[in-house]
Length: 311
Image 1: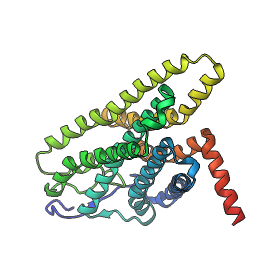
Image 2 (image 1 turned 90 degrees about the vertical axis):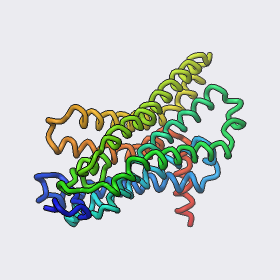
Image 3 (image 1 turned 180 degrees about the vertical axis):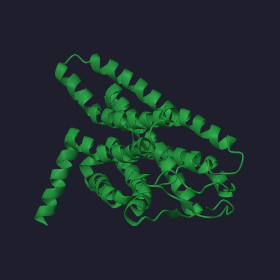
């Protein structure tokens, strides 16, 4: 359609073959997006306002909630635009910007989960030195490092997208822009854009997962060395929420990777559904996990709503 117009906008795609029921499909999507914004927004607000939650563990949790909020706000406009309004066109600049934030925030989320593992490691391995090691300034430095790693590492593959010519089809396979989707439409040498993300994934997601796994092996070793059964259970309980969030995040990452690598003959709807699971399931689950498993968060919610009722 736009084969000769390199600067033409891209076309986003919803659920191929189900366009007639897009407006019905949009209802569960709207409800999930609303739940994600409400859950993470409330969690972020609670940690920000409740002084009893001003501890390293909760600062990192606030970062996780903030990352999930921004990720959701990055994909929500185009997904609901396609499903509700059939608004498929997206300018190249807007597409590349959305792609940049999607991939950046995925790396930030992985980094925040790693920082949270570091917090649990210090709390259980050296509890007496916890406050002297994880000072506010150190938490800020770790947080800044996580953000810098995410925002800087995605620049190299996204920048070339701005000067690539696009003379093939301008149709993308999702209702949002992904780097791997856009680069395939370029009429240029995309070797760097193929190789760099593989190395980046190995040095971020894969390495983070390995470090988290190793830290939990050491944590488990420490916990098993505690004489009191009650104290063992108490120590391990402080890690349950984090372990659950790590599993939710990395299982969806692995699932999406497997579908992309080995599911070439799988129906298109399987690829699309898995990508939505990857973007929506962790942000949806994280506030639920921490609300159910963390007593301080539960108490914080009770205080927040009791104050609201009094007002």
